[in-house]
Image (cartoon, rainbow, N blue to C red):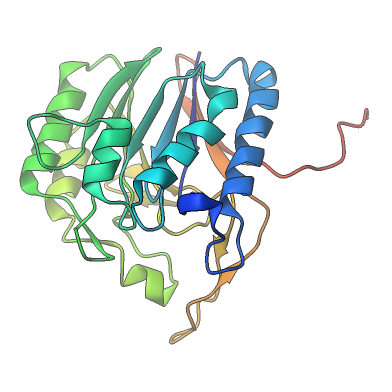
Length: 264
């Protein structure tokens, strides 16, 4: 059994400043880490935490230090991360490491029975994402190295539209090379994304593709053309990905307090 928690889009600011003067992202992350630590025994343990981008909102070094401090309740689980469009590669590399042989901060690690592959889709100075043909080939090669290990491929920017216009304008652009590489890889089982702050599931390149919700705030769900860019203070959430030796299952984990459990 291998259990991976996917966190995304924590958008921390130096000094714990509120996001848009309204969202206490640091308090939300602290609640999330404490809640996940409390849930861990019921989940059979947590084997790793993977953060799918936008750890910081402005790429400030102090924000990354605050992230590590807030995650202390989950310190026993290995932590992996890829940057999003709000992150800055220099401070991000200092905080989380990354491939020494490439400019992009791509990740590959074996955790339990699964392989975690993360691609840096950030484009410095831009909101949209991109993956080079070289990155796509690198991901396919890492998956092919361990054909008996199911691989989870993490991206910040989703390679598909979700119907929210201003977010679709910022999605992963020109994903053809990645789509070809993923479709040809029998060991990649899931595409796991961030960026949209909403739990979303579709099929892409013949595989299940998911977007993780965020611990603090959600992109407002308005599918009308020309809808304004807004956010909501929905309850915080994350994703759980669990490999049981035969299949991969994923669930949304709500992180804010709720009543229960009550016996049936």
